[in-house]
Length: 108
Image (cartoon, rainbow, N blue to C red; front, side, top):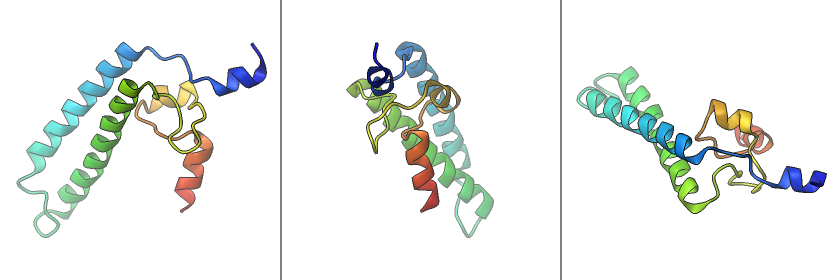
């Protein structure tokens, strides 16, 4: 295998295990949103509201990761289409950007 091929391919992923993990995370976070909904308004409980907003962003990322699994693009950066290193996916299985692209996003 050439160096170019090694770097251009997506990491090896256990899609069944990853899908199960992501679906479980999605269910837990959706339950948390449902539980906090009665008080999660900026004028009622600003902390609960901020937490529910952050949780909703993660729900959106998890849903997008599940869609990438279905589309066959999971493990590839949505910005540059390069591979996302396996260690990053292990820590954050819903990561959508490679480390370099995420740094660019974080700078903005």
